[in-house]
Length: 130
Image (cartoon, rainbow, N blue to C red; front, top):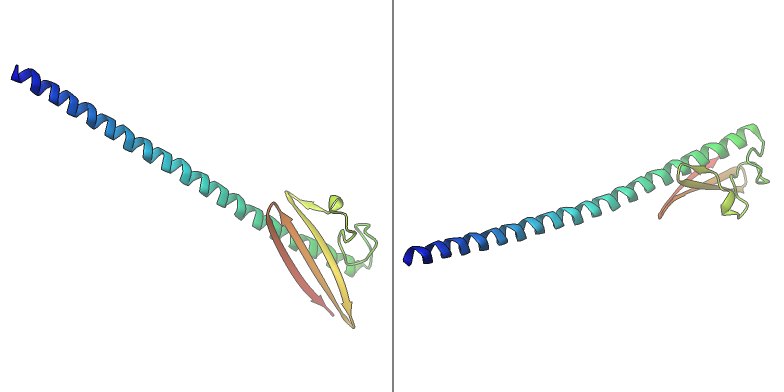
């Protein structure tokens, strides 16, 4: 009779131990999944930032080329600006990013502002030419 009780206690202890181990393993798996989702979102934000920066740089290169050639190559009506027509639908795209370049002239200086955007990310590059 005592042996049966001890055997039951051992089985109960083993069963409870197994349940505790399974709960701990489940908590570890859940924390890994949630942590991975956060890392994935952060990676997407970083990629969007890089895309916006490179779009702004590419737009600046396009605007400087227009100024060097003295020609409106993108058809927005002005030399040295890229898609500066107020219509976001026709902005040049670079991958998932879009760009707009504006120009302002003050005396002998021309200031170009290139604004790249991708998702939530925004980057602006400014150049002053004389």
